[in-house]
Image (cartoon, rainbow, N blue to C red; front, side):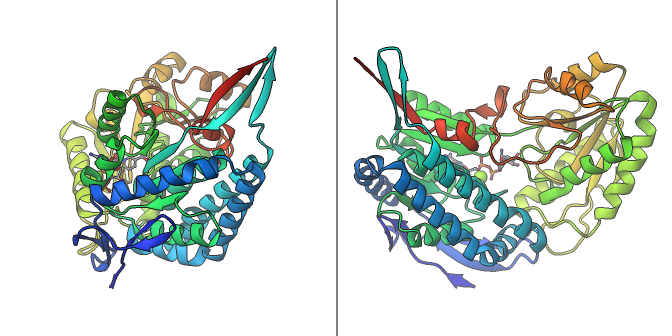
Length: 462
Ligand code: NAP
Ligand code: MG
């Protein structure tokens, strides 16, 4: 157990204004592994002022130099990859291999992609008798969740730095330690003082103060729809720009011509990964009625194999929430074919990998985001029925389509109301825009589309 001090503000670790701390708990054994300061409005104000002061200088820094800092930052993350993975494993509970392969590796790839984009993006364009400059939007407030704790920070900070913005990050209270590691890497990368700032603290205190601060030009938030709605309302009052990455209830559509075993196995792995705490997880599997029973059996077998291999969920509240949803699924008449609400272990915030069959569209578990290792399998009659079910939620973040031939899968994917679709098991691409249709959010992250979120245009006419 270690008591970490200070907030990274204006290029140095400065004592917090208040005395309160947040305990960081290891979800595997429920032990407190450290404490960080619980920031207040005073800390947030100091951080936003530092970011405002640093803005003119950083905005005027040539993109090639910003790119060089980002490349140095990527190298710093590479050098710290083991420490990053161990830290995420300690505070989030994910198995070390997953932390290495995803929680450490993806942020490195994303930081690298923005080092490249900063160097190659055209911040100036000509149209007719005008020159259009792409200028930084200003001071960015980044409020991030715990499920991919470093990725979600880097997916905001890297494009903001590339654009010439300055930034204040408020990480999730459950995972502040990897955020502190990141601040050290930013410092060592030679990013000028005040360009990046970190305030740890509670959402309704530090997070809200940051969203409300008049010195902030753009609030970029990832997390629950409920908090996203609040932040959007605050921003509307001040005509601030917002970017929101919210929840999902994505569909994995297995068309009759698909390789069923592959589609089901990849689908189950997708939902169980990170203990189900992935906003873009394909938590609804849609199977044609002729192949339904076979798919259910395959999914139950696949889920049972995960047994002890998945980590816990992040905290006790999340565990109770997920188990509550499983109980609700049973009560509403869905059929448990793997897992269930019982705690698989005495200590730790574990939930059994769970699969429900006979799920109908109107059930709570088919409509609401559970954010745990829970898969619902629904049955469809024909392609139109599958499309109606796939599009039948308030969300539209991600999805998957499986078919015997790619053209058939693409034709279906084009009719889905969702921001990204994996075709026959397509791989994650850190350059592809990520973000939601409908209530899954506003704006996009990653790649050149993610960079554009942090820019505004100025047209000069000649
Ligand atoms: P959350 O409350 O929305 O947390 C996201 C971030 O917002 C955290 O940094 C949080 O701080 C902060 N926050 C909370 N209240 C705030 C406020 N009033 N003003 C400003 N910032 C505020 O999410 P959660 O409670 O951790 O998880 C609840 C559910 O959200 C999950 O079960 C899941 O369904 C969904 N979720 C979605 C995603 C996603 O990637 N789309 C990620 C995480 C969670 P604290 O950490 O101090 O609360
Ligand atoms: Mg919260």
